[in-house]
Image (cartoon, rainbow, N blue to C red; front, side, top):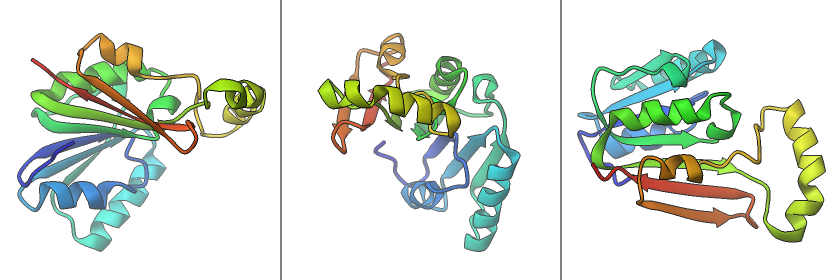
Length: 172
């Protein structure tokens, strides 16, 4: 996301806070981190982590990301293993995009089905498993939805095509 000291960053679906240390390190003590999650239990664990580490510049918000409101614009947005589990992911994306400053980046990291024969062979099992766990919808990919907002979009796949990083830059 190319964050620097003093920046403001939003993590949508922050869960237990697994990315907070990296986000705090990126924006420094003068920056701010907003962590949004729907789950009270997840946010309680994130709050404990903030207390343990003494982080004072994190605001944890229990909200439906599709109804997100912030008091200021942000310099970066992260969806980390959260996009595919959101029932209204397109609306959550639109809300987050609204608060992203022009010239800044939104990054989505998530899992998906592998392409090719391995994906076709594993699809029934992965779909079955996803419906019974919190893995989300492996068919839900944000690229088309992001193209509604920007033409500046990059996608990188890794781990044999089962994960992706989608980076979009807000042009105006």
